[in-house]
Each structure stands twice: as structure tokens, then as C-alpha cells.
Image (cartoon, rainbow, N blue to C red):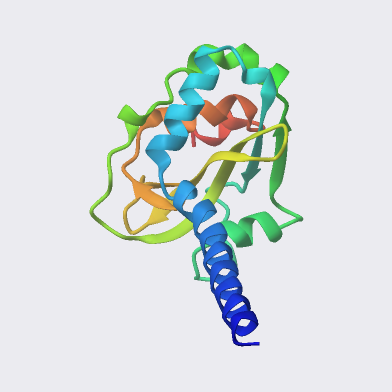
Length: 178
């Protein structure tokens, strides 16, 4: 009887550690933008762009919301349906921009020492066709205009972050020439 209780307790402890570990792994992987960009660069170099897709959530950066509060990534994804644009780009369309995509690598990542509030107007995510998120980027972080969020971490601005998504934004040329 005593052995049975010990086995049950040990089994519960093992299951608890397994559950906590499985919850921590996705967070750990998501919090490493340099690894995500390394993986992305390898996929591009191997010519496997057709195996991924891009989704862009876009709200005109010059549109003033009625609220003073900055817009979070979740608010942009789940709200503003009447004024936001969502663009889905399949891998075959990404192949036309392979040279631009090759510029995305970990050397672009310069950590930001400041911590601003997220005020996202453009959010894009590269993912595999199976739905596995490679990396995501939110532009911009208020108070530190120009910083971006990559996989949840703040980095300093680099023009390539916008150049990557510009071909897919409606009327992008006229928008950013204001």
C-alpha cells in the first residue's frame, strides 16, 4: 500500500515537471530573436521560402485613434477591423523578394537600452506553412520612436525592418512620403 502511494506521488511530481517544462519551452524559444533570425536566414539560403508565409497587420501610422493609449499587438490583431488591413502572403510570392529577405539576419539586432510603450501600427509574422511561428515584429515602440519589437524584445530601428514589408503594404509609397 505504501509503495503504491509513493509511486503515485512520484508520478505526479514527474507529470508536474513535464507540464511546467512544456509551458516554458515555447516561451524560451520565442524570447530568442537571434536564433529565430538565424533559422530564417538558413531557410532563405536553402531556398525554402515556399515553405513559409507572411501575415501583415497594418494600421495607417498617421491614423489617430480616439484613445490616448498606445495600441498593443493583440489590440491590432483583434481590433480595428474597420480600419486595419490584413495581408496574407504565401511563400511563392515571397520568392520574388528573396534578395531582400536575405538581408534579415542576427547582425541587424541591436538591443535597446530604453523601454518604451508598444504602439504598434504594423505587425508582421513569418511562419511555416504548418503554422509554426518563425519570428514576429511590431513597429513601433512609443517614447523611443523607431524601436521595434522582435519576438517580444525591443531592438533599435533598422530600415530593413520596414523595407521587408513595404512591398506588401497597400499604397505604401504614398503613405510613407507624407
